[in-house]
Image 1: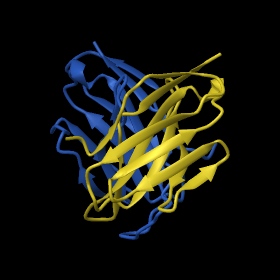
Image 2 (image 1 turned 180 degrees about the horizontal axis):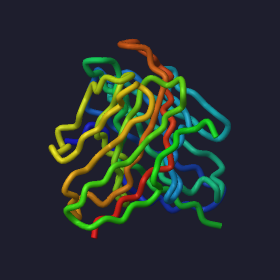
Image 3 (image 1 turned 180 degrees about the vertical axis):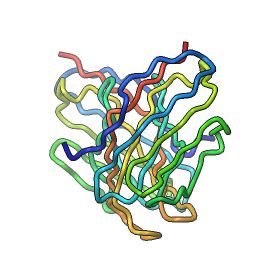
Amino acid sequence: RKEVEQDPGPFNVPEGATVAFNCTYSNSASQSFFWYRQDCRKEPKLLMSVYSSGNEDGRFTAQLNRASQYISLLIRDSKLSDSATYLCVVTLPDNAGNMLTFGGGTRLMVKP
Amino acid sequence: DTGVSQNPRHKITKRGQNVTFRCDPISEHNRLYWYRQTLGQGPEFLTYFQNEAQLEKSRLLSDRFSAERPKGSFSTLEIQRTEQGDSAMYLCASSLDAWGSLNLNTEAFFGQGTRLTVV
């Protein structure tokens, strides 16, 4: 079983739609959680951190459920520019601290 | 440009040759990661450094792969006797982490990657 799992998609949605992605992680000792965005043939970039209480940044809302070991990302009022791959990232404890581990990514395509 | 820099951006090599990639992290960042990414997959962890110490190495990494960060600044990743299966994007990332801390906002910044094609 992979340490961080995501539905690869693609999710095809019209502009203005609301879309949600989930991500599950296997290690209950995981400490920090993030969503990264990766455009085609570009490097990943941090979209937002995920806090235990849930957090919102404009049209984006991230939530963490430690009991069920999943993270979610909700995008409201989708824009064409939201089309990208969304990577769930978990820091796993290791001997020295926290190691970043990526899921396989969920591809989103927003269409006119 | 004060971001993470990787060189070369592209590398085409013949099977069996050795290749070396370089990563220059953001200057004050003490942690440096190497990842490999193939089409349609997420970045796969290879190894990482805390300053000059290599702390973790993926079990998936064969003995043909070696990484160094001799002075705790730039890092090199060498692949010996390349195989066609090594063709991928090799990504470097850096972050500022305190040793053993629960740093809950550890943003890693990525370079643009080195795309390796083994023919």
